[in-house]
Image (cartoon, rainbow, N blue to C red; front, side):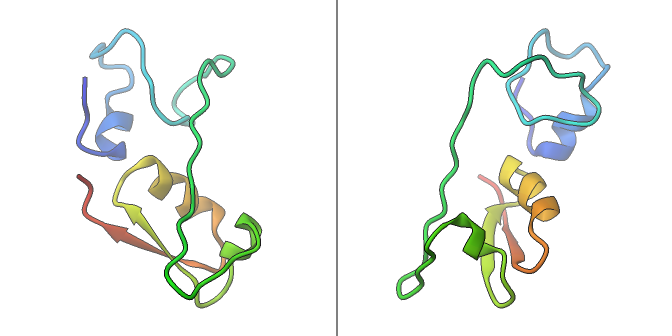
Length: 90
């Protein structure tokens, strides 16, 4: 099953639409230990430098993500000072 966004995926829990899922963790799921780890990366705009990922969460920093995707879900909760800028997925 392919879902249009994270919200549609989350709404599928308990509906019997799939037998096994590959996706982000959810408070609705009772996840088992990880079987796959996917890395994400930050790509800095020209002229912007960050020593490491901890420097991202600062006032005036804008982080682009695909609307409703895994990065949107995670960073919207994790970032306290940086602005999450959502772009249409796909």
